[in-house]
Image (cartoon, rainbow, N blue to C red):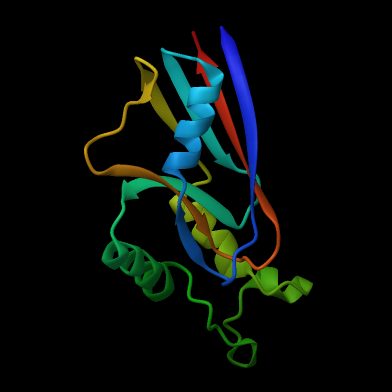
Length: 144
């Protein structure tokens, strides 16, 4: 079995962003020369995610609204005693940790005939939940 590894670095302008990375993953696959196998795409930080979904800006906003409204809102108040315990360590990103845990930090995509074997609307995304500083992601292509 052959393998090929690449790293991407993101330094987002906003604290939270969703970035379509499908083309970058396809480029890594092309460099690998692998025709049959799989690609692992994994965030290397505990406040980021990698996921597969539809490239549609309304859906992206729905995801952000869902995370904020139902999963891990940023606006919790220590004065009311409802702050994240993690934030009491001096950090301010407890919500980002929970968002990453909910969305997941990696995906495995099949490779068939040298192409990502995704469904018709599927794309690969990097979800940044606590950005504005450099963060890495690994792409590992494995197969024959």
